[in-house]
Image (tube, rainbow, N blue to C red):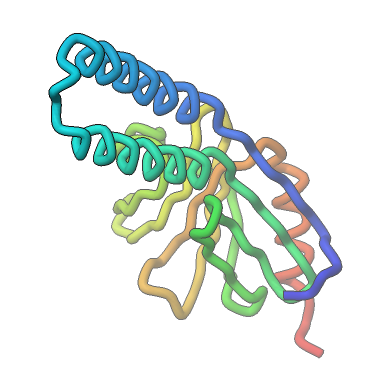
Length: 165
């Protein structure tokens, strides 16, 4: 995609980071307590717990930030390294999502059906969602959270209504 941004937004999802970090700290505390009370415990168990903690932190940091970037070529939405992008000619329409977050089974990256259409959803807490009606994808609609839906919808509608060059 072009380096000229029409719109950029990064939403930090503090809830998931707090929950996962809390669980990891609790688990580390229990492990240290258990190991201090029985030092003959297998040291490989500590290594396994360390590996799980590192993987947990990587997943937390990957899914704690939702980034949105619109350029003259298209739009890209992603959680860390997992991104979904569309060229403007792949988007037919854009509108606010009327479905509840619970309808998709929670938060994060979800798949679901709504009004008979398959949806891919990038969802976080506390933010409204936009729906992109897309063509040429495995799903009919792509839904994602944004803190500034009206501004982003103006950018998207302005780009999808332009005639091709």
